[in-house]
Length: 190
Image (cartoon, rainbow, N blue to C red):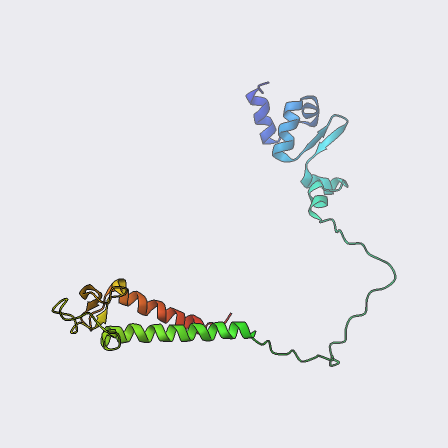
């Protein structure tokens, strides 16, 4: 079903007559797709832009109007509220935080403060001031190194659990940061 080039060129130039379009289904389909011209063999084809001048309703205009899905009930409308008159408004009570959340917040603040204090005291003074360190007969540094190494905290009787004060290690940084976050999360509101 190939179209002759001349016939297609005449269709695109707008020089083809309605009789030829009505007689050829392929040409009618092309005219419908390209120009929006509906071709019926019994009716002369009309372009949408020319429909208003001929008294026919335009196809595009009818489809452009949205169909409303609102049912109009006769008998009046509901009265509108008077915006000038003061309306009785009850005061809105303040929302109180439940006691369980208050306790949880206080617990986070307390836990964070204790952890932060312990981590900072350990780095700068050493927890060896408060916890007994290893015996000096075990190693030369026992009793002198007072900072508790957090990864070996369960082996306080050995010299590897103790280090020099004033030196930050990764476990010290993690303990300080985690305690500070707990402390700050205690102040966060939901």
